[in-house]
Image (cartoon, rainbow, N blue to C red):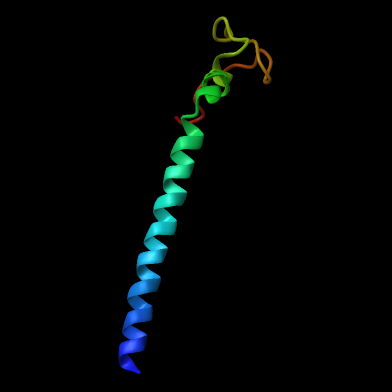
Length: 72
């Protein structure tokens, strides 16, 4: 009985390793597929869209409030 358990334990570990390796390789191949370059570049540029320069002082969601530090 112990031999069967040991055999099944070793077999399950090896198959789990193969499954994890295949999942990892699938994710890597999916991420670096030839058609994904445009999608990744577009996603990486999201923070820089429609921003030519920082907002000048006084413009923005708080209006032209005085922006001094509250601590004294």
